[in-house]
Length: 290
Image 1 (cartoon, rainbow, N blue to C red):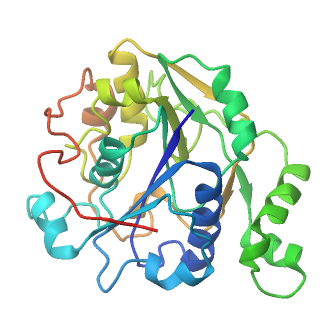
Image 2 (image 1 turned 180 degrees about the horizontal axis):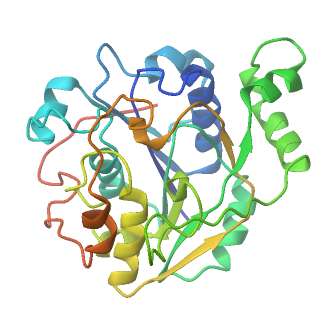
């Protein structure tokens, strides 16, 4: 079974401690997945990867794509209100190019689950259902305390994950975004969205009209239902979100000032409106493999 992961971020220290969070994320994703796509979207200077790569244990399965600011402007039709790190477009670039049987869309703050536990979970899943796995939280202060040196020791990330698993519990956190919303299922559903490749391709990834922050993760789950797929939250295997400040895709912290329209994103979303070229499949995008 081939597993793919897609991560999107930007070199802006969003949420604080981005160096630490991304380093743990990259190392765990590389270890768990056969193929990892990291899309660095609209960084002002250089990709986040270049600030952390010396602490990342590459093994030839890490695909690094850089969408620099001038290209990001073109891809968002020069909309000045577009999300600085445009998640729906970045994710679709990775989703469209992933070759795994099962593909996850996740965030830069996540410590991935163990590979064997994830595969065991997937073996019991339905190929025609869209899943979201509820995350568990861990603070950077707890990580530093675990290492007992006053620093983050990135080479010991596996030991840290074992410790986190042993000291954590399943996280049941139900949430509805709007009235009659049956699609969010769990709080922060976009942190680990998992589906068979056929599901992602049938719904054509994230809805590319939603280029502003908020609601795109709930939206893609509703799209799955509108296309006739199941939708379910699961609570294992254990994966961890390294906690930071305000979330909301940069809206709550003021990085982005215009949100997606909640009714367009949820109430009035039916089948996808994405074109056949979703993920910019008609554009050749260069990337390096590390």
